[in-house]
Every structure is written in C-alpha cells, then in structure tokens.
Image (cartoon, rainbow, N blue to C red; front, side, top):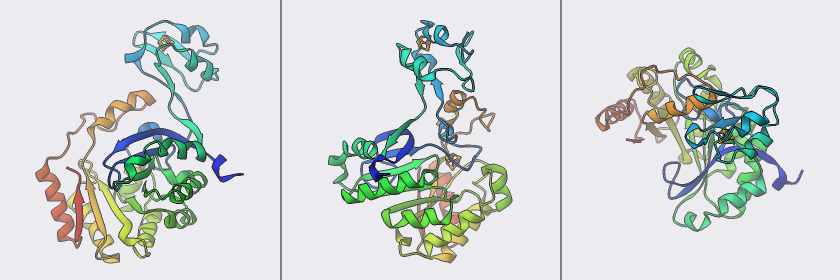
Length: 308
Ligand code: SF4
Ligand code: SF4
C-alpha cells in the first residue's frame, strides 16, 4: 500500500493549540486507547469503533432521524433523541439527513495524504516554533498510520510531538522515536496494582518504555507527565516514587505535573458512560500545584514544570 493511502481513525483536529508542545500547534487526536483511566478526559477517544453522537442543543426536533430509523436505533424520548448505537442502522444515511448537524460521527477515517493536507493548512504558523502534535486516545495504537504520517511531516520540515501512554509493543515505540522531536509520555501511577485498578492494566510495560526513552539519545526530547487526580495520583507517595524512578534513570529527566481537568465530565453522557467522580472535583490552586512540584523536586527531579 502507498504510504499516503494508509488510513487512520481521527476523532478531532484541533488548530491553534498552545498546550501540546512549543509554539502554535495543530493537534491530531487518534481514536482508540488500550487503557481505561477512570478520569479519562477524552472518553470519546477510548473505543476504536466509530459511533454516532447526538447534540441536543443543536436538535430542532424535526423527527427525520426517527423516520429513517428501521431497527430502533433512533427513538424520541422525554430527553430528546435517544440513540442505541449497537443497532444495525444505515447510520450514514441517518446522520447525513439531519438538517441541524445534531447527529454526527464521532470520528472519521482519513488517509495519510488527507491528514497531511489538513495540518499543512496551518503551516504558516509552524515557522514560529510550532508544529504538529499527535494525541488521543493512544496514537500509537495506529502505528502504521502514525509512522507514515510522521515521515511525511518530517519531509516537510515540520516539528513533531506525541502524547502517549506507552502501553504498546516495544517495536512500535522504537519505530516512531526517530521521527519525533518531542515525546510526552505519561506515568500516572507508580504502584502497578493501583495502576491496574484505576488505569486498567499493570504498568510494567510503561515503565520499561520510559526507561528505554530516558536511556536513549532522545532523552532530552522526552517529558514524563502525571495528571493530578484527587486522591488517586496526587498523593505524595505516588509523586515521590515516580520522581525517584525517572531521575534515577536520567538525573536531568523532564517531568511535568498536569492540573485536573473538570471539563471532561461533560463529555461522558455523549458516549453513554458514567463519570467516576460523583462530585466533580475542581482544578488545583497554584499553591497546591507548587506543592506537588516541590515533592517532585525533593525526590530528585531537577527539571520540573507544571500546568496551573
Ligand atoms: S434529524 Fe437531527 S434535528 Fe431532526 S430530530 Fe433528528 S437529531 Fe434532531
Ligand atoms: S491514556 Fe489517555 S486516552 Fe487513554 S484512557 Fe487514559 S486518559 Fe483516556
């Protein structure tokens, strides 16, 4: 297959992002993740399967979707339109017939060529230190697409970054490393049993890949990240163990502490999932984030940053 025609499943392309690497960036979100963090900030990105979504605020109540539904996949209820996405409907027809854009696919299949064309629209902004960031989901769950996409971007001289949780085969990590200028790698919980409880898998493979990255020539291009999740990842013991682990491998290792994102909760009803926190916590104050950073510093991390 021609590299340009390899397909990937993408659930969003976010332009003018300033958080996912240096400068102004375009972030491409790839669908599918082998983990299942209870706080996942992109729940629509976990499943590898495309599914229809319904946005009640856009619906004009015309009833077209119900009339086109032949298998009970779309019904009208008190709360508006109800979708049963497991039903074998002609979903393309139903979605295309919605006059208000209230029904959409949650993702689209794109070739590498199409994805390159989409991100190159923002190329004028990349000259000022920006570039393209691959995120998800877990982008490395689509290794063929990611590798071909990164190679095309490097051909065009674009700065490339990735946000990954590294729970993928080692060959995949090794294959993409040469094509990346910046690697954000998550280690959310140091204790493997706790990792299994809250993230869905043990973390041996993730630790192995963090070691691989921090012992490689690319180590100065790696940032290890931990999202602060109340009473789960924000404990002193967890931050301390992660800090000792990464600074023990490479004393100059970069470590970033991310603030809790309460906005994720709003997405859960879209994908028929229940959010883990009954009472959604708020973001941490600057003082609290500085306290976490201090814990990392006192456990050996020299190069710490935080999102306040
Ligand atoms: S077709 Fe679209 S606008 Fe009409 S009822 Fe269905 S979701 Fe609402
Ligand atoms: S690794 Fe990221 S995308 Fe995957 S479940 Fe966790 S938060 Fe969600």
